[in-house]
Structures are given as structure tokens and as C-alpha cells.
Image (cartoon, rainbow, N blue to C red; front, side, top):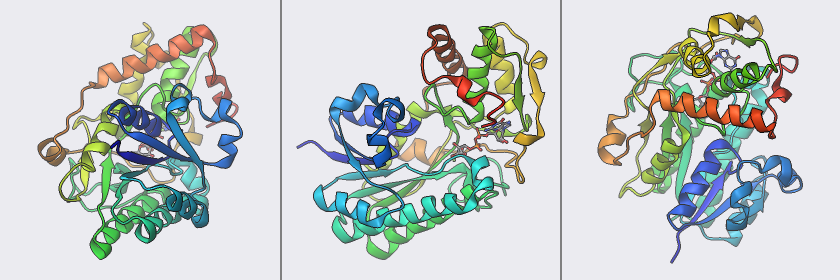
Length: 339
Ligand code: G4F
């Protein structure tokens, strides 16, 4: 019998890589998508276009408990990966209310519907290193206290607590992955890595002449999303539910990412990068570096991509997309639109 998985956020970077991975190992894969997305597949399904014939998509909204309940009442799932969220930290400062509503209530609705209808379904919650925020120790592991610095980080701590509470109160298999930053060619253009690599490609093709950024000194532990979705799956295969930090154990500044990305095309970042205060955050997470010893030992998991390979793959993909003028165009996130 094929195992059946449900993915929320299947149209995003992680959802698309996870769907690909699960299909590859013989799963039947279902996804929750907003009705507006179903009505506009050309634009909304770019990351999963190549998989559409193999997926079952259900219209539902994280803001609507009845819509989630309806899907859960029609199908039985072995595993549920809850990845959908408002995941852009900067946006969460602009509209903390909708970030909280979607991220906290959405997680609660998923857990409540599973408890009501299918308690044996294993549940994965996409926790985040943003929960560590103003870090109390380095590197950060599963016992490091949380100190979130944004509405997004706060919403993820709430989701983490909800997930643990369902595990403890109702004896359900509910786990959180505390994933550090993970990127790739499918990353959204609003996140700093993709903003850098897509602008590098535009500059190389003469379609832009500068890159405006905020804090160049922030340090992040950047891995490849393809590596990280394998960890999500492994967490749900354990005998007992538990939470895991997933990270490379290396940290780099935004400046170093720029240096490497520009050097991929033979350019010096200092000639193109300008500081724009608009991109500074009211409260910053200065340093993230994860200790994934527990995941490496127990899952067991380890990343395959190096930092250099990640940057190189992203730059090459953006050069290819510029050269074919493929869609979606990075120009929609031109400086005028300020992502
Ligand atoms: O790429 P970012 O927007 O990612 P951030 O805030 O670290 O969050 C990402 O990783 C989390 C895991 O730790 C996820 F939970 C979350 O959903 C998301 O995927 O920013 C990275 C750093 C920040 O310090 C930011 O201040 O880059 C700095 N930065 C400097 N200039 C900028 C910019 N970030 C963005 N997005 N745009 C800039 O122009």
C-alpha cells in the first residue's frame, strides 16, 4: 500500500521539493492549496507545474477550519507536513496581525482537525531558527531557549508549543523541525539570497546596475532546501516523536553571500551593493548557527550541499533564467517595488 501524505504550502519552495522527494520514494502526495491558486495555475503553480499530473490538490484555506476539516474528512493520510505560513520576516513587522492569524490559527486548525478525524496521522510542523532570535548561546540546539525578535518568530514559537502540546496531551505523533535558513533556485525573490542571485544575474545581463540591501552583517546558517526536506521526512519515520534542529553548522554574513555570488560572474560586490535603510528591520536576528548533532545521530541526517555549491547553483539558475528571459521575472521585484 502506498503511503499517503498531505502537504500544506505545496506550491512553495519547500513544499515543491518535498512533493518531488515523496513522489520519488513512492508516496501518494496530496496538497492543500487556496482556491485562488487553483483558479490561476499558470502563475501560482510554477514550482510544481512539472508534478501536476501526479498530485492531488484540494482547495482549502488555513484561515478556515471548516475547509481543512472537510479535506480531512474525505481522505485518510499517513503523514501531514504543515509548511504553509506567512514566512517573510520583514512582512511580519508590517502586518503582524495577519502573520499571527495565519501562522498560529492555521497550525491550530490543522492539529485540531487531525485530533478530531485522524489521530494516527503523523504531523510535521515547520518550526524555524527565528524562534532563537536574540540567541542565548551559540551554536543553537534543541535545548537553547527561545527569544523571538519578530511577529513571525513569535508565531513560530506558538506553533511549536501547540505541536508539543498535542503530542503530550493527546498522545499524537506531532513533531517540529527547527530548520535554519534553507535556500535554492526556487526561493522567493523577497528573501535575501534570491534577491542577491537574481540581481547578480540582472547586472550581468545589463538589466540592473545596483543591488540595494539592508544589514550586510547579519549572519545566517544557510543550507539547501533539497537537503532539508529529506530531514522532514526522516523525522516522521522515527519510532517516537521528537523535535530536531536541522542546520549545516556553518555561518556566513549577508556580505559574504554577496561576495561569493558576485564573484561567480567575475564581479566585485562592493561596486554594486548599496545600503538602503528601508531594508533594515526594527529588531534584527544578528547571528544564527545551528548544532544538528541530534539529527545527525538519530535520524540519521546530514546535508549534502556546501555553502559554495548552494550559491553557485542559485546564481547559475538565475543566469539561465535571465538568458532565456524566463518567467517569473525578477524585474517584478525591482527596487521600485521594494520587496
Ligand atoms: O532572507 P531573509 O529575509 O531570511 P530570514 O529573515 O533569516 O528568515 C528566513 O529564514 C528563517 C529560518 O531562520 C525562516 F523561518 C523564515 O521563514 C525565512 O525563510 O533575511 C536574512 C538576513 C536578515 O538578517 C535580513 O535583515 O538578510 C538580511 N537582509 C539584508 N538586506 C535582507 C536584506 N533580507 C531581505 N529579505 N532583503 C534585504 O534587502
